[in-house]
Image (cartoon, rainbow, N blue to C red; front, top):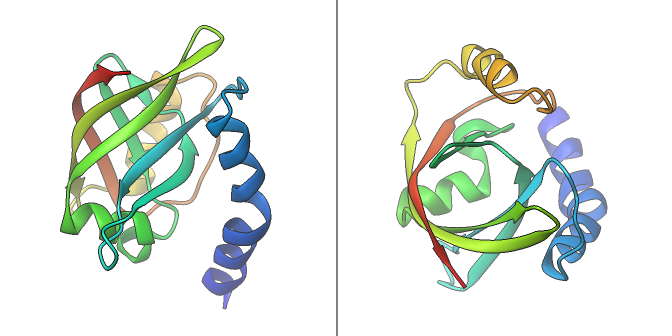
Length: 137
């Protein structure tokens, strides 16, 4: 029940304005835009995520774990793009996502909180690491 309520709120209420703001380049500290192919349609799908960039890696902890749509899409095709904030502007970066299904999401959140002082708390499932993103304009 909780999953259904949270998923509905995120999909129809919270994510659309954040996705729009990021799409037009408004600086939203703490957010990034994840783009990957839909597993059924093959069309690009964009999801706002917490900014988990640490050096050349980008870390995500999926709130709904392996049930999250974007995690299932990454499982099918790990090629992703991330729209990341650099100063006041955003730039696209390409990379390959690696699902860490055996990772402890709560421990990963604690680690990220130390690494990213501005990180927001989120409940966890699958961790994902985007290895060596490459900037693409």
